Figure 1: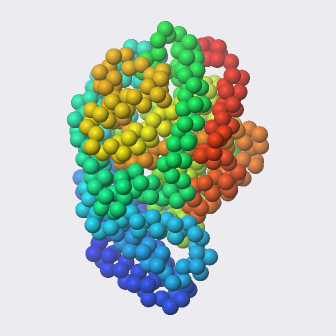
Figure 2: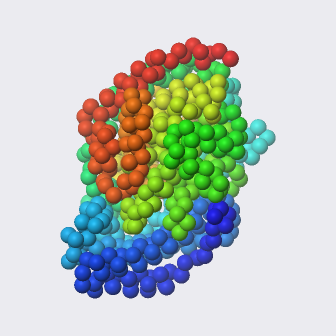
Amino acid sequence: MKFSEFTYERPNVEELKKAFEEAVQIFRDASSADEQNEAMKKVVSLRNSFESKARLAKIRHTINTEDTYYKEEQAFMDENLPVYQGMVTAFHEALVQSPFKDELEKKWGSQLFRLAELKVKTYSDDVLEDLKLENKLSSEYVKVMASAKIEFDGKELTLAQLSPYSQSSDRETRKRASLAGNAFLKSNEEKFDSIYDELVKLRTRIAHKLGYKNFTELAYDRMGRTDYNAADVKVFREQVKEIIVPLCTQLRKKQQKRIGLNELKFYDEPFSFTTGNPKPQGDAGWIVDKAKLVFAGLAQETGAFFNYMAEDELMDLESKAGKAPGGYCTYLHDYQAPFIFTNFNGSDNDVRVLLHEIGHAFQMYTSRGYEVPEYQFPTLEACEIHSMSMEFLTYPWIEELFGKDTEKYLYSHLTGAVEFIPYGVAVDEFQHFVYDHPEATPAERRAKWRELEKTYLPHRDYDGVEYLENGGFWHRQGHIFRSPFYYIDYTLAQICALQFWKRSVENRESAWEDYFALCQKGGSLPFTKLVEEAGLISPFEKGCVSSVAGEVEKFLSAIDEEQFAKA
């Protein structure tokens, strides 16, 4: 069935609540583990049905935020998702209180019970109205970002559509595009600060109501982090500061020399080669056709999977007016179908994002056999291993998409992956500051962000642009508003993905087998256990970052950069 044939009907929340309560009561009243297992099937069916509807509404709303019908449906979901969360928490409470817990754990594994315990801790009816408001504020941020209509070169562009101009070989065009995008953000600075200030205070209030010292502790539990904490993350950040930041400074100096500048300004950073950044050789349809060859080359499983995604219209790739910015992958259980949403803009990032989201989608599809929603996909840092590793595992076939620009793409993709890590940990440390100091003013938050940029991105030169010099860059990072403390997951996964890349160079078949097995495990294990099972070093172990940094330097030093100056 094609995506256009998927049907949406607003769920009746009162009927759902009644059915859910009945199913949970049957579970509580059961006289054996077998009876509870049967009762769980009804609970799972209700959960999958509602979550499929909620995700379908989100997809269609983000595809066209100006569609009145789905705008209303998204508002309905913002209002009722916390109500639904309360229903699920009631089930989790029954699960952790089960007198047959030991027997159930043998069937389902201990991770389900760890996650259930955290869900119980992180929800109470006392915070229901607060959670509704949190959703509304997050959606308000998305609306502001999606409202961008930027006049540029006689065109009206969204932020995503403006992006290719920031990679122009003409420095003045790059500068004008960057300034135009920042002018839109600056014009909404007070809105962003106001929305975020309200979110910070609201989330802190929720944490206190639930008995937490601060929102940071609550956020870690919300994220299902059962096997590491903020202290472990700090160990990782210190490794990045010591090893990756100096490497990135070297890479930026090489970039400055390569593109022939006396000074590298912020608007020069997206421009890597005087002969132009690597670009896919065709439009979205062409990219999809060539990607079929890439995934067929990687493995039989990925070849068949990508064909299915393309044929069933399970990807919305092109940027257009009214479409929400960003990209994501989600899963519709009612149709056993993943769905990919992104905004192509004609740059090499189109390919990177497609490969990334296919990694997510492949994992979701591969582990679809798990009966409980908790195992359909793992916690988010583990999810990102699948996506980021897919970007690297497809290296041997990337020529299908880039032709003569292949070496450029490999060089820029690998350097980009490494250069992202310090930014990612800066976002994380920023959020730790914010929620450790919820009383901080918007100006103090911006000052802290600028301080962290100077620590983790010491090369960055904002050329006197006041909005950026005053610490406004983070406003564009939607995760800070919508998914607090998520962003570190990308950096943890990037280190794991670099390990998969290193192993694929050494033994491609072995690396693929471990990657495929990792996808099949879904969310049945916590992050550090999944990493161990995949034969990777935990990012929280000292020496992990240095184990891949050397391989990166070796690979990049073997590439003749002078070839990039030749037309």
